[in-house]
Length: 210
Image 1: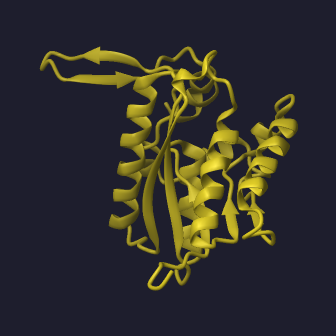
Image 2: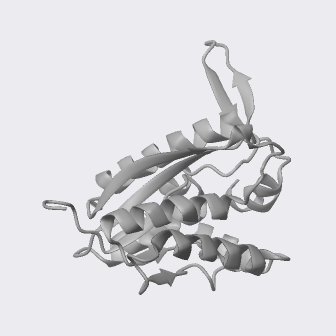
């Protein structure tokens, strides 16, 4: 397509810590290259509050990047709604993400994909199987236009704590991690959402950032 932007890499930006760190370090380390940062809103019935907070976090992170002089990216947003598909979630997040990432890679002819998966993720039982299945989905979407692709895992050797420690504190504070936020109405009657402090993500992450 004439006049279409050219990107060196695509990085999904969920609004969480891992994707923020992957995007931040790539942008900082590759000032002469350009990334497509893609926020994907997964509407799967798990928690509408989580979707709202991740959406807000992704925009706050983008604003931080720009304020920090990191402008070598374009930010786009997409949504996949499968709330009516039955028992939730019918598919893993990484499968849904790879379907949409593949669509954007194929549309923009992007050959490199940054995945924010960390060492703790790889240590989970059955994670390798879920990852393999998600990569099959990605390649099926890309075929036949893109067969020679690179999938990079910059956080693969880092624990979650190491990923957290590698982010500037102001940027870390913009990220969202809770999977089941709770509503909180203050004295000014403005509704906000707070981490539940009970879900798996809260139990894993909150001790390192509080």
